[in-house]
Image 1 (tube, rainbow, N blue to C red):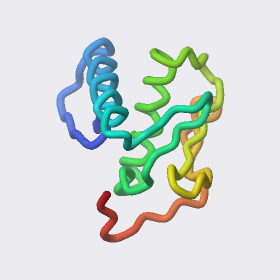
Image 2 (cartoon, rainbow, N blue to C red; image 1 turned 90 degrees about the vertical axis):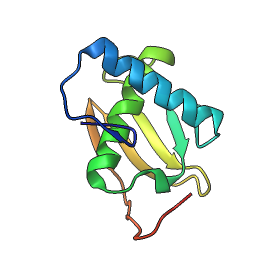
Image 3 (cartoon, helix red, strand yellow; image 1 turned 135 degrees about the vertical axis):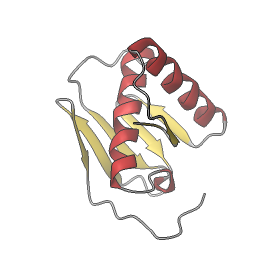
Image 4 (cartoon, rainbow, N blue to C red; image 1 turned 60 degrees about the horizontal axis):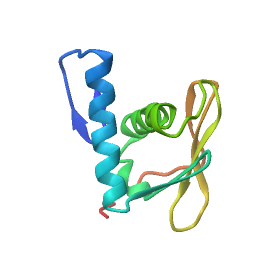
Length: 109
């Protein structure tokens, strides 16, 4: 399983998983790579390397928002490109979805 960009192969408990998600998101916020505005998360699309990681990012950021931003379970969360403000993903009814998102070959921040 991936937590942001870090791969973990051993199953871990929920508290440990949540702690890692909170720490990773806090680091991204400090670096100003992501921003929260209500139910919209703005981020650099280069953080999403491939479809598997993008879906994992959506799930992890949704957990973060449930814990820290008081977003209720099954409440919609949207993801937008921080530069263009175009919606690139969503989490609606606990289903992660990429919206018109294309992965680039060399997409470094």
